[in-house]
Image (cartoon, rainbow, N blue to C red):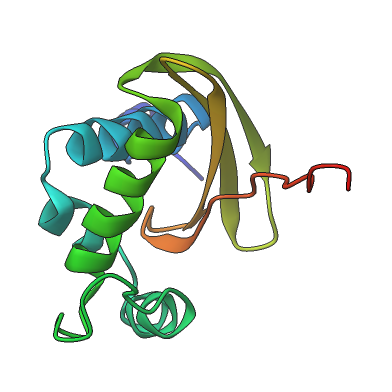
Length: 144
């Protein structure tokens, strides 16, 4: 049987636990974009799980400089600079959606650049580590 004191301790414990809300995942994704805009590529890569860090490097090999290290930071920098060269200066995040996944949350962001929008997707595990970073832009070839 619970006493009033043990009940109060239980309530305090439950409310003191870190609660992961959709907002916390959205805020983290927005902070990762902010880090990209400031050139803090290491701060972004530090959020990757070890498995995703390796997968990311294998998926996006550097194309501009064959002597870049096999680390995510130069790849993130290359990709961010490429987006800015294609779409102009980054302006803001137009919108975001957060959806639950089997392992955590997926956050889709629509980034507004000077000339166009560009989608970015983050997936997080329950510990709020990045398990996926994708740039799911659709490409439509010009008519020939």
